[in-house]
Image (cartoon, rainbow, N blue to C red; front, top):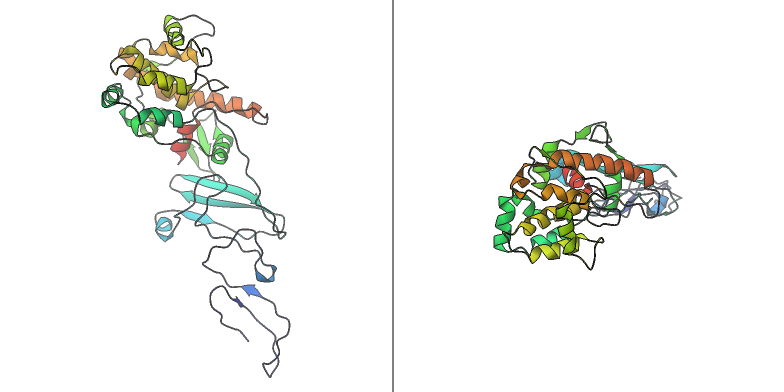
Length: 329
């Protein structure tokens, strides 16, 4: 006989006698429930129930929330299979161009989900956002006149460490593409820098000067931080920038140094890379700087460097990961 129970009750075939008064041992199955169930927890009868994609964040740190019927109709897909004991399971939420995936090991012993690898980065957007919120109207107008008005709406404080690890592992620095699980590739072009970050992309190549080669602009820059040089951080640059008149030369230079340190490249300890500062000597050509190829080059070089040292305790990624994440999403 089959007992039709309410949602969440146990139903299944049961061996009963003719009198219907005694019930023998039964084989139970769990009726699928729309209610949230914790992944990896045992339900009645020892059956592992997998949680539907819905309310919680995936292992990459990027929310899988709102993958609803409407999202599915717009192209979002979800894949989930109940695993055998001891097998690894991959959950994938594919939205738009990219995927957010997580891999975990699941068994019937109530084990915790397998932790996805993480990474550390020195580049962070919070120092940039902090300055943007404190700019005066005059300073904002100068930033717009320099061609960086689109960047003023940037509001990504940091990169989830698991998503960052996945992106760096799946980025091909030679072809400059992100390799997706289904075999597709997302190619990073120079023009994507303009579309993603709102940074101009001109024709003047951005170069790094040779190490330890004196330059008057670098010397003047360091003179503003005599109590900190050479340990000059993005926060120090931001504070100095806010004290400058909007139309001053060093307000503009400090702004370019700040976005370079926060979004493109910095030293392994998070300090400003002074070798890039000579590019900001002629401010009349600021709009003509070729940021696209420069950011692509930094991304490829830093990914290669990070892979060689990623297993070391103090391994930090110091390249344009923020750009790569926003581009991917």
